[in-house]
Image (tube, rainbow, N blue to C red):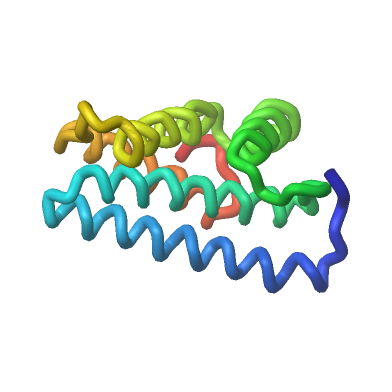
Length: 140
């Protein structure tokens, strides 16, 4: 991990928040259209992209391979929630929960994401993106 300069941060910071918002809009649209697997996928990616935004705002960036899922999840929870306390502990399980549901949606041939689970994932994503957009808060 390395610290980045503010000039580099501004462009990437805005880009990932924009992507997170677009993914969240997609999750909600897919949910409304009863495409629950797609909704679960977009719900996860909205959180993932919002977490990258938060990490960049905290002047953090990975070395080497880029923004891998495990790296983003561990750094967001470990550094921004647990250590720096920039975000509510309510956000701690969201990336993991939505990631696991995305795996079901994308890869498991014999299991589908239903309305209830997709709805929970979308609500978690809405709260997560809202908390990141607000720049951190004690409650989502």
